[in-house]
Length: 267
Image (cartoon, rainbow, N blue to C red):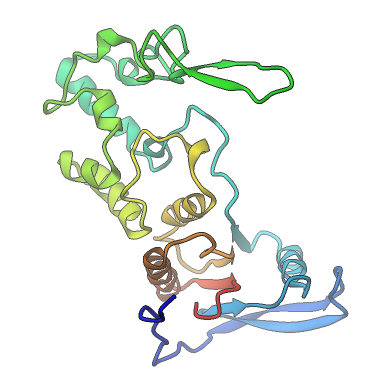
C-alpha cells in the first residue's frame, strides 16, 4: 500500500511470431467483433465488469477448439483421496523406495490400497451426514487421521515412516530423497511457488490460486501452446505475484502464447 513494492516494467518486448483470428464474435456484449491475437508473446486482456472479457474468451475457445488451453482456478480434483504427491507423479516412486528397502509390495504403503485404515478406508476421517446441515468430518479414532494401518508405520526409510514423509513439504521431500525423478517434480513445484505445501495434502483442499499454479507446473516443458489464464493473481500475495510472472514469462520464452485476463494493471 505504501508503494515501496512495484512490478518492474519490461525494457525489451518480444515480437509476435503470428496470430490467431477471431471473426465476427457476437456472443453476449460482443457485436461483430473481429480481432487478431498475436502469438509467441504474453497478451493482457483487461476491462471493467460486463465489458465482455469472459464472452471473448468463450468465443476464442469456440472458434479455435482443441488449440486453446484454459487454465483457471477451478479445483484440480474433488477426490478426497488424491494428494499432491500423486498429482506430480512422485507417490509411486516413494512407495517403491519403501517397498524395496523392506522387501514388501508397494501397495502396503498406499492408503488407497492394502496400507489404508480399515475404519476410514484411507481418508483419515469419518464423514457424518447431518441431514439439512453441512456434513461433519471427525478424525478417525482408529488411525488418528494418518489414513494408514498402524502396523505399517513401523517401516521407515531414512528414519521416517510413510506418514512422516507425506507430512513433509515439497521442498523437504526434494532434499530428503536422492532420486532424480522426485527432485525434478519437487523443483517444478518450487518454480510455481508451491514448495511450501505438504506432499500428502489432498487436492480438494487447495485454493483456487494453488490449483491454477499446480496445473501450470505440469506444462512447464511444453511448447507451441496457447494458454488462457483467468485472473491468475487473484488472492495472491505480492511476492507470489512476482513468482507467477516469472513462471509465465518462462512459458512464453519456451515458445508458448499466454493470454491473461487481469484486473491488476501493474501485471
